[in-house]
Image (cartoon, rainbow, N blue to C red; front, side):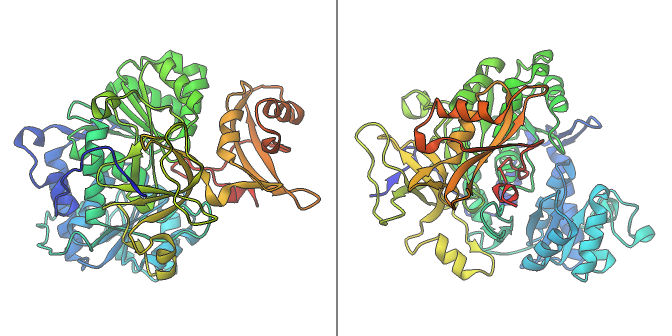
Length: 534
């Protein structure tokens, strides 16, 4: 049997994302700050942001962009991202957000696959953008460089060319339930990236679903370091903060010192991170040099957070540490530990090794991947592990132009098969074990890399780590750890192997170690295991 969210259902408005966020904004919030650029100190009010979005939509419409079209956005986190992203959607088009670290080849591949008609970027990324635009046959005016010299000088329009005419936003009509709003691409950590077609309803639903669990208010100041081009940053930071009339401190990339300085300067209350940031906050001595007392809540997502690591951050910074779970195909949030578990469910917070409960309006199944049998809720303890399936209004429309991959992922009953192995407790609280495809099979036993990674991170001499399965001389798959040492640490392979062996079952022991300078990760913080296998 499936099990439903323990939280009450919420009403999901049948509107576009723009109308949800800005359609009925109260007068009292129009002159409140929406976005802060800490590099310049510039603040953008909600009134200014809405005006810019509408002007951008009008400019795009005048350039032939409308319902059914796709526009690529290649940009780090900057305030203008909010303008162009929502401007594209306001014009009736879909935004395909592109990883700011992509090469020209990768940009061109996404533009081609998504059938984008235009690309918007910034000068710092222009060389790759220009090369990619040429490869897909774009004319100069189809590549907008927001901070460039402008169309008259270079042929590429800039922000002034877009916004100065202040053209009215077009009147567009579409069905929010079926009209594609965003086309992020799956991370590709276990395969080729695919376009994830998310409707306006998907994005609207997820913002509304997480609102009562996030507890965000107009008094909150949120630091936005997770990239907006990734669905985590797009929904949980950009859209949710704007919906709740909070203030976003926008950082183009993670730098520990700047991160700490911005929290101190802007009195940040809420931080959303990935586990690598938690490692720095728990272990780096420089953290003690800053006043971070304004922080009350920190939530980790995008990859599993170890309970001990989360508690170490919470204790050091004196804040409420939480965890969530999701994926691009779920818009992205499907599970959260609520900001106030006692008020929401009448119980204490679960361990940080869990991802919390299914969000409102959703239901789950845990299914044995070998037999296809559903695993029931246990009467005590944790269930046997199985693949997590999720059903709800946040489930994607499907993969772009890929019916087979869509059918392989979403079944006839509407359940999305996440590919993640999970366990569940009697209350429906979910614990992610590991990626189904990333489980290491050692002599028939399943070894979850995330479990070994969490253990290795407790070693005082280890700054970061990743574990994958590799074949030994006999062709047997064994766990191999890639380890980044703490600065000036004296650590060898034998010490790492002995440390793990003392704490795990024999089949889970690390059997090979390689020391490297940095663990390859996606912009959202996921370990790129495929890069370690090269």
